[in-house]
Length: 108
Image (cartoon, rainbow, N blue to C red; front, side):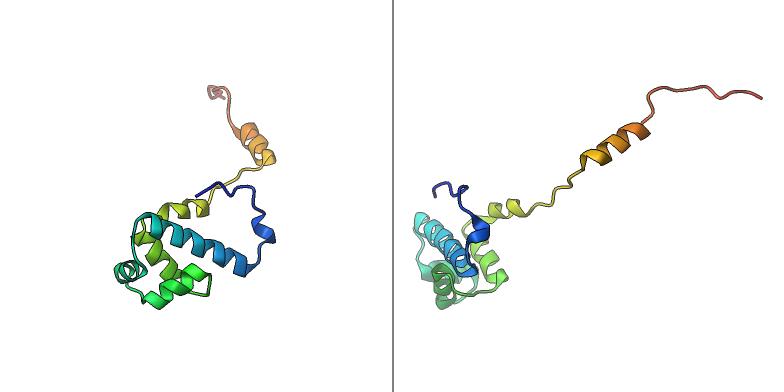
């Protein structure tokens, strides 16, 4: 597929997002030369459910995951990785707390 990084995802309606996902599924199904019947059987869903997904209608998340798995497209879930972001202030505080030299203990 082409690069859609320029899209304003926030401005898209839920229906438009669903249709975009459906187009993604259909594109990869066709690219792999699979019929709706073959893909739906491999995914363990009905052909009509796959048709609904490709048209952007409402389907369950597990249905989407099953289809992505069969199409070997689960890599798209990389976008959902949780990355810990450290604020600049936290970095400064951490740097202040870090020791820079060792001292011997004083004997009384």
